[in-house]
Image (tube, rainbow, N blue to C red; front, side, top):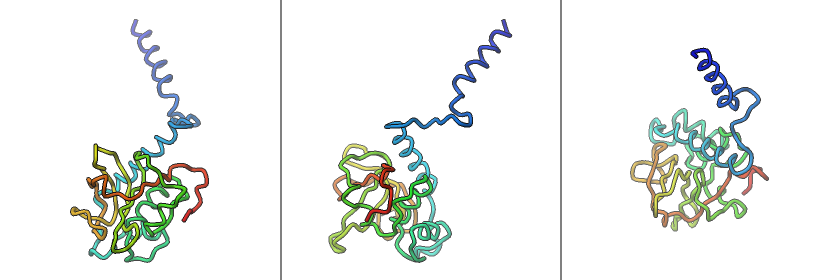
Length: 187
């Protein structure tokens, strides 16, 4: 009897773990693939929560890595560079920009709020999108976000990567960069 239980255990293990073997993808094509990509993006972003600038001047090893990835000079604002870096770590060629308005070209804008959708906040004194980040989830009229170059108060000139709670009405645009078709740098 014990031999039968061991045999059935091995069969069950082999059946349920076959997708984790080399050559077997656990990522399904189609909508399942898109959700897996979104989850991967969010996991990368979540792993960065707690990164802080060294001196409060858009600096520090991680911040410099985000800026370099996006082609920006050290000391530059880095919210868009952070978003770009997250997508790059997930294997996307785009976006790759340090400028937040460039994350919202007409072809990427969406009304759908999904995990890993990029959000943009408009600043009237700048007359443009002046801060961006990633949507983690929606809770009623609020968004839970992960964003760089912000702080506890939600500033666009902050000191680190934070999880924030923002009112939905504060967001001007959403963009979906998870569609890999035409993944060149669109501006």
